[in-house]
Length: 149
Figure 1: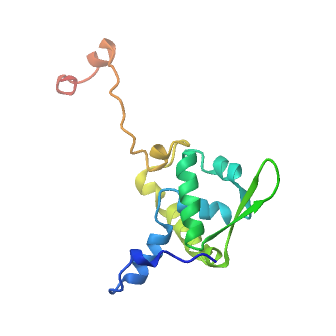
Figure 2: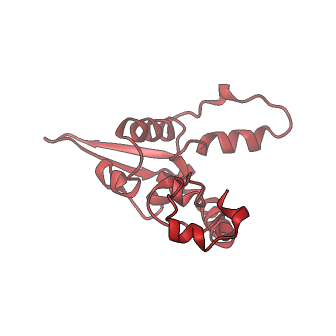
Figure 3: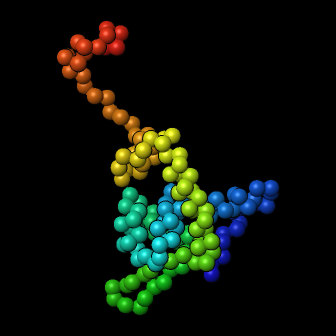
């Protein structure tokens, strides 16, 4: 098992929380871990599940998860190369935490708006900037004068 990069944390009160969050902190790490709960996946299978993540970012996130001992990377000696990723025992121990995050998200997503598509900016609660729409003259005529200004 790989060693966690402990040098990132000090040992002040709250260190355990900082360390735990630091291990799964990263735009795609929790999603990758969530997908690996269902079993071993190859790189391209992870790509399909985490579609908006660039290949370099996906590689970096997987590498960090592996270095921290949460993910196991298995390389097969064949052509073309076959690489599989699975959760380590330590990574599997995050299962109740990931389920709790999902349950919290399911219960509270309405506070931020329902996801409307696969665009992560839309899925983040519809916080995407809306472009102003042109008003037709007929639509302006039906509005009170103060609303047209």
